[in-house]
Amino acid sequence: MPELSWLHLVVLVLASFRLTHFIVFDEIASFIRTPFLTTTHEEDANGQMIQQIEVKGTGLRRWIGKLLSCYWCVGIWSSILVVALYWFFPGSFIFLLILAVAGAAAVIETKI
Image 1 (cartoon, rainbow, N blue to C red):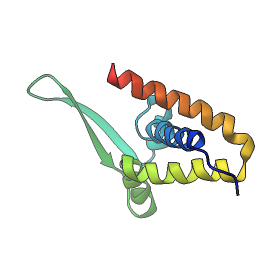
Image 2: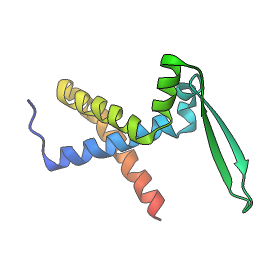
Image 3: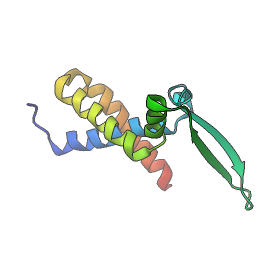
């Protein structure tokens, strides 16, 4: 069992955040969501664009669509993947570190 330092914990948290955001929101990952979700944009009375998400299909397809439309749900599975990579594949830490740096940059960007 690997020792988990505070620094490694912060890396895991930020990597999980970035992976979750990538899956749920990033345009480059839309191919993951397209078979399960339909996304449309409508302008409200104030001129703001509102995103509407519709889950497609039934059964397993619908379940996956509901999962992919829920940031919190994808976050659980992303966290499981990140921790499993860290735990079972120590060489993956560089990949997790890259995700963490990108996650930290995203947090900084939203605060500026």
